[in-house]
Image 1 (cartoon, helix red, strand yellow):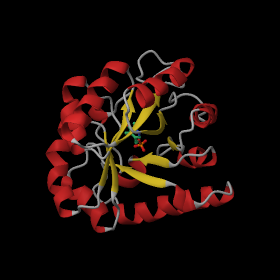
Image 2 (cartoon, rainbow, N blue to C red):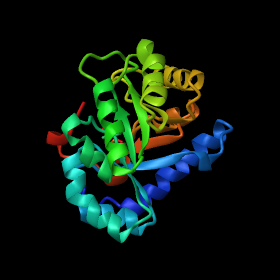
Image 3 (spheres, rainbow, N blue to C red):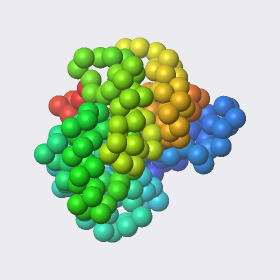
Length: 230
Ligand SMILES: *Cc1c(COP(=O)(O)O)cnc(C)c1O
């Protein structure tokens, strides 16, 4: 981590690059949300982003988010917190309690548990289905071939508020074809939102229709290697 990372300036710079990529693709910049991925960064650093006016954040672990966010959300009530990491079923209750958006629905048992928790809590975070566009065995997500049926079961069968799709392309491949695939699956299922693109490829994701990009390193600086995941 670089202690002198200028978080406020990075936010301005990334937003400008998103806007520029959007205009180049004939898209409206304000249709693209910047999700600031604050995993591994402490509350003090996150506060710098909040003080700069940023309100949309992503975390990948329930426990870590619970340690940092209740207090931050109380201080900045308009904050929108996205879960972008794998979710275990035994943490579904806590995820529904804390997060405003759950981006990583990737199996039917989890979807079923989340639907039940939503009914019990009367809280309905927006849901994204994670698609494993690269068919990587170690990576979470529904295979593209199974996506239509899975989306139907979540949305129509379980009544989950499914708003879009999310993907993490293989790190060693050109991401465009993965973004295009995600866009096609969303389109044919009538889903309007696409969560795709990270620090290294968010401009490409915008070109392919991302409605939100998940950017961590380019805003907060690098993370400790021990927390590098998938
Ligand atoms: C960590 C993470 C990001 C942010 O990655 P950067 O390369 O730091 O921008 C985006 N999406 C997911 C799912 C992540 O886990």
